[in-house]
Image (cartoon, rainbow, N blue to C red; front, top):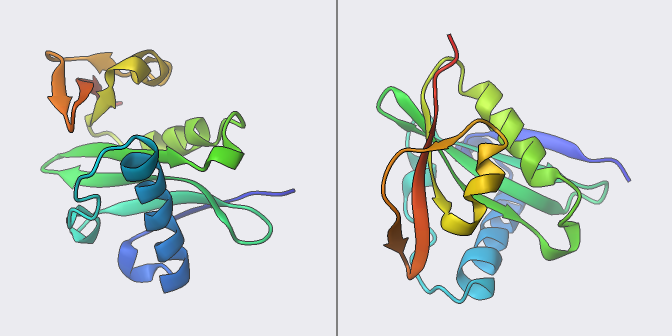
Length: 147
């Protein structure tokens, strides 16, 4: 099975594919993590926002993440992988692609605390105190701009 990596603004994504991306995010963050919150927060529509995702040969969305512009910085979030596709390194490949697309800008993210070590693999460091978001402990993390 071959995989395809995609990167696009919401406006450029086929509606069926966009539905699959958003459904995956809801399945992971709302259903699986039992965390009712407004997953569709409007930020996907902001100028400069990009979604990255992998599809398989059948066009199924296997993993996704979002990159936002936060002033001069970038913000990575909504990193999600379908249950059936976990353990294949897809989220790591998406992270590497997102960091590469962030050019020479500081990259921020709010990591679920238990995943801070995973994000550290990509060079992210904790840069603030732990906080609760939707009842889940998170840590703010940054990746210094590459000059």
